[in-house]
Image (tube, rainbow, N blue to C red; front, side, top):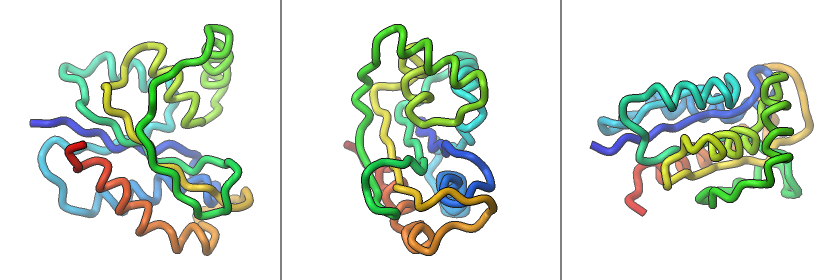
Amino acid sequence: MREVLIGAVGYSFQGDLSTGHTVMTRLREQSWPPGVSFEDMSVGPIAIVHNFQARARPYDRVVLISAVPGDDLPGAVRAYHWPGQLPDADEIQARIGEAVTGVVSLENLLVIGGHFRIWPDDVRVVEIEPGPATWGAEHSPVITNALDDVARQVREMALDGG
């Protein structure tokens, strides 16, 4: 049986930056084949490293969902296979420093996990461009309208064979 983890990365109750959690909640309500599990990956990269190292069997695939500010318009979705390239040692140490102070970042999680070699060969990412930063459980209208599309893309990435 193939083991697939779908993980949400992001802050809680920070509007669009909470999109990963909202999408994961929607996905949990769907029917899934055996071997698919869900986890909040916002607890910090070092804790995630410890959790992965304690698993008896590694995951075959990991799909991460997060809102990541970039240069796109709010609501734009980026889906890709993470290439696994790591920065130099100083940058890795800087990211570990950020992580232990409570910074929640998809990039930090990927880099720190990659440094400690916890990731399977198949790591996929679905990012959505958030709107302006806000507080609360509500998303901006553009993100709300994109939630079904993001959930569909995550499901496809989790279940497809390629």
